Length: 136
Image (cartoon, rainbow, N blue to C red; front, side, top):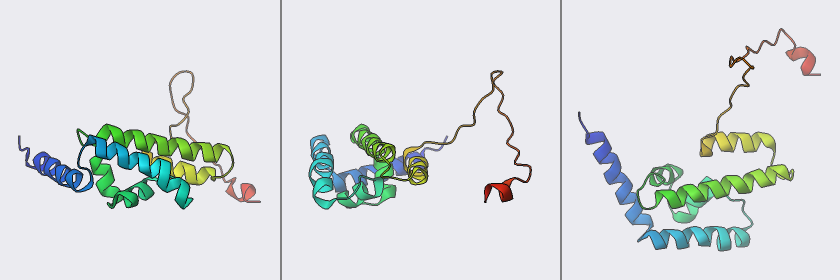
């Protein structure tokens, strides 16, 4: 089995990590600064792209770093914190549900799950030409 792809991926992840963080403690401090200093002073809402920009990397780089053996757990906790902040904004009516839904699917791995029947089957959704009526 050829592990060349995995080896290249790990090397890329390591290069990106060295360029962003000097240690696990440095990662913790930068994340703390993002949440405790940068966000309050900038007035921005926490988000993945904002965190990536704060760290001077791309969203793709940040996603890659989320798998890093040293920094991954810290970054995944930061992602969870970002999702929590956005959900609270939505609960308070300050973030549209559609925006929250898109963001959770796009950046946090959430997905729609069809409702199951008592027997475990998933019902088919049939609109039967009602779109025009709903549009009114």
